[in-house]
Image (cartoon, rainbow, N blue to C red; front, side):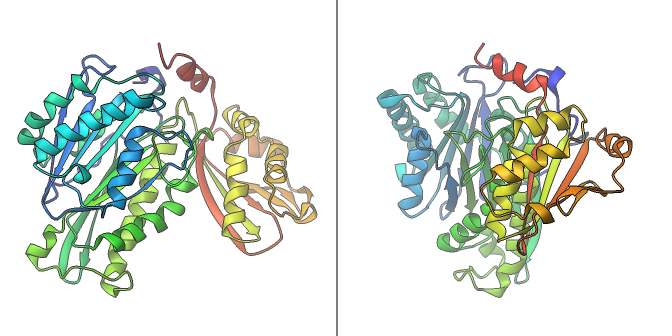
Length: 416
């Protein structure tokens, strides 16, 4: 885990307190996979009838655990147990990696008394190092037996790698007249440029929602949350985002939702999107070595997708991110990033703002631009850069962070 010297300036003084969710229990353990004297294994056990939905990395070198999650989702998306380890991503590990997953899944299925298809696994950490699942698979039965409901924070801590704090969010809404809860936690600080998911994100609800409806919600809202966040432009081999619905709210009178058009779903859907958005922002606020949280708002593009690509071109530009770290209002680098995006932009209508300060208007430096004033704005921790590319009505927002010397140090020493 990152040293305290690199602790994010955005780490909350007090973590969110997530309430227990009926039908979900957790356990953690120190399995010694890579780290010493800290938990690195997490198990979530779910009640019979639980369904899962998820989005997974589109990396062409994705890990064996991702392959298993894809198979479980394709098999109908029923779920009874989730096993997550940190310290080793079990990616690019060939037949040994697949065997490690089989060993883990077999032990987890026994622990939860379920089918292998009801097991979900995820791993995060170093790529390319063989993982000995035999070191921790024997722990799973005891962990499942001892699992407790009020363990969201310990579960979140167990899956951290270079994160400097656990990311935890909760929302409570009503479906019909029945109150339901959605809790989520995620990890991620580097190798973050999600492509269908984020590093690792796990969400849980007691709502009774059919699996196809749940899948539609997760897929739709990943697009405008996790896929609009980046730290360094690198998509992980292990990206996994899963939402588990235990359905236990039905015991309290909630009629199951089986149709995505059901108006009773509106509040839940809004809360889910809001939670996913907050989790995505928390990851950007814990980017490795960051000193500033940066929001890029692009307007005037051909459509939303074009605006997002322009915003990502800015958010993933090392030369622009280092200027932000240096508190330099170098709006010329924004012009560069817009131009390299490949999306339509009218050079002579391009306008740029740093915060509330307009720095460029209609293709040239704004007459009222004052370097000293904007340089003072750049000393803040929260930086907003707005761009209007002048060709349409498309707009999008992307969240990121700056690029500092500490990012280089963390990643130069990652395997040591």
